[in-house]
Each structure stands twice: as structure tokens, then as C-alpha cells.
Image (cartoon, rainbow, N blue to C red; front, side, top):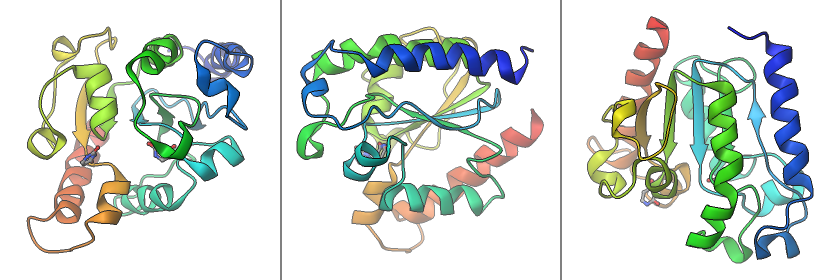
Length: 203
Ligand code: URA
Ligand code: URA
């Protein structure tokens, strides 16, 4: 296993590239690139969608309301971004008005996400929301149907270096669907995070 400093150095190289990236038009409106947060833990990576307003301001993924909910979800099973999880997004720059990423933006940015996966080689990748699912698993259906299932590395349309993957709801979706009813989105998320923790503990 490569030392943490070695991973850090390699990730920094990719981050440097993003800082001056002009491969798509989002470079014209971004305030900061949003490359990563958490630690390059080789057990657990989470891939979200794209930076929002606060992420673009701070240069860190998942720092707004959705991010705070994500932290609470992790905390409910004793996981935290400071010690257990590497967090990044499909896009490194904010789409104006938080619109969905366009195909050419995802394509332009893929180089960076690909490098992050390749450098870290996490054992588990959480695909957070439909955009991340599409990028890694392709058209496997909507998140509501596929969340909570484990996918094998062979199921991915890209090289995930042996990672097993689980699609999970996006926390923004949970914020919009705030019922705690049994069988509702939040309840399902709490089931999923427990299953993730069980697998995490086996590593
Ligand atoms: N939503 C995402 O998908 N990523 C972020 O970093 C913030 C909100
Ligand atoms: N739509 C999304 O994009 N993500 C979710 O998690 C749920 C619905």
C-alpha cells in the first residue's frame, strides 16, 4: 500500500492541473475548483455530482446543507470525512444555477475523476445520486430502484480498480423529501449506510 504522502503528492499533481483547466465553459464562471475533501483513505470514496454555491465559494465538496446532512449520515455509523472517507465530485466546477452537468462537461472532467480513482484505488465507492451513477455504471436505471445494491467492478463502464460500488441517494434529494417514514428515502439511506459500515468494517 502506498504511503499517505505518496497518494497526497499524486493527488496534488492532478489538483494543480484542475486549477488552470479550461476544458469546458464552466471555467468562466467558477470561483474555485472543488477537487476533494476528506482523506485519501483506500477503503472508502464517495463521488457526488458537482459543486454548488457554497462549494464554489469555499473550494471544498459538500459544505452546504446537503454536505452537512451527508456528515450526519456518516456520523450515524461512526464514520467521518476527517478520518474515513475521500470525497469528490463528477465535476470539479460549479454549473451555473446548479443545473445538471452537461455531457460535454462530464466528458471534459472525466480525466480528473478517473485519476482520483486510479490513484486512490478505493475498496468501496459510493455513487451519490444519479449523475455519479451514470458516470461510473452507465444507464442502469434510476437511483430509487438501484440504491442500496452492491455492484461489482465488472459492472462499471470504466476501470474502478476492483472497487465494489453502491449507489446511494443524494443528500439534496433527502432534503427535498424529508419524511422519516419507514420505507421513505431517509429511512432507506439509514439502511444503506449501515450496510456500507458493515462492509467497511470487514476491510
Ligand atoms: N452536491 C454535490 O453533489 N456535491 C457537492 O460537493 C455539493 C453538493
Ligand atoms: N434524483 C437524484 O438525482 N438523486 C437522488 O438521490 C434521487 C433522485
